[in-house]
Structure formats: structure tokens, C-alpha cells
Image 1 (cartoon, helix red, strand yellow):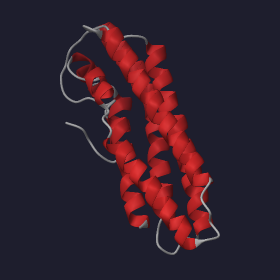
Image 2: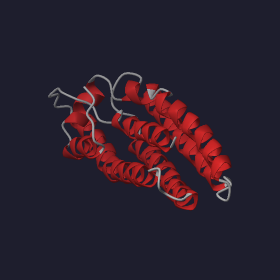
Image 3: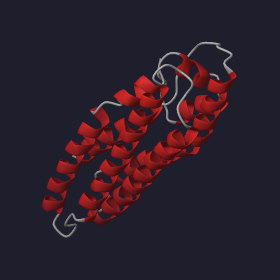
Image 4: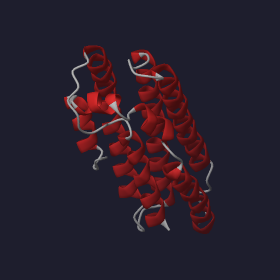
Length: 190
């Protein structure tokens, strides 16, 4: 059961990868400046998300106590919520990228990032409310949380993908901090 929770959690790190594009060598200075601002802000948040995933996976082994799992999950969900909210704030602060429909793409991405943040905050409340005194009851509660996490990891990062396609993705792929964010999150997006 705990392994299912850990697998569902690892999907969360994938969402931040939507902010890191690949390929290209456009020289639009405004767009490059925008990409640098966003990538520089995303890098520490990607590291925070990776650390939260690692903490959860470490504590969801079958021999951890319900209290230890609850404590680790609660902190990790809070960290993830904070990280996605910070990424949303960074995209918002950077303004619209200098591309066609840039303002709409930016607004959609910020809305989606804030929604992901709220979802992790909700999961934190759920895990905080679990009964750690009853192992079976706790395991049932974790199953529900794992199902929510699975949905969250599969629920599209459509607005993020739309934001980083084309010229924006190319500009972001040239930023060292986006390349580092991709590497630190443990996967790449092509």
C-alpha cells in the first residue's frame, strides 16, 4: 500500500518539468530575459519538490510507523504546496511572455499552478486528519490520499505545456537554471 503512495507521489515532480522546454536557438532578448527570470525562480522550487518526494518515499516503506509517515507526508505536502504557489507567483511576476497569446498562456499557467498548490494543501489537511492509532484505518486513509495523488499527477499540466511550447520552450531550454531544474527533478521532457 505504501509503495502505491510513493509511486503516486513521484508523479508530482513531473508537473514542474512542464516548465522546462527543450531545443532551439532563438535570439529574442525579451523572451530570453523572461525565460531566465522564470527559470531562476523555478530552480529552487524544483529542488524543494524533489526533496519532498524523496522524504515521502523514504517514510512510506512498510516498516515506518503511521506517525512517521503522517509527519513526513504532511511536511512534504506543505512543501509541495508552497513550491507550486511560488512557481505560480514567479510566472505571474515575470509577466506575459513576448509571444502570440502570451498573456492568456501566462494566466492559464498561473491558475493551474495555484490549483496544484491548493490540491497539495488539501492533501496535507487530509493526511493530518488520519487516525494514526489504528493501523488499518490509517492504511485506508492513505489509500484515499494515494488515489487523489494519482489523479493530481495525471491531471494535466495542459496550461503549463501550452505556456512552454514553441518559442517560450526554446528560450527556457537555453537557461542554465531550467536545465538544472530538469536534471534535479530526475527526468527530462522532450
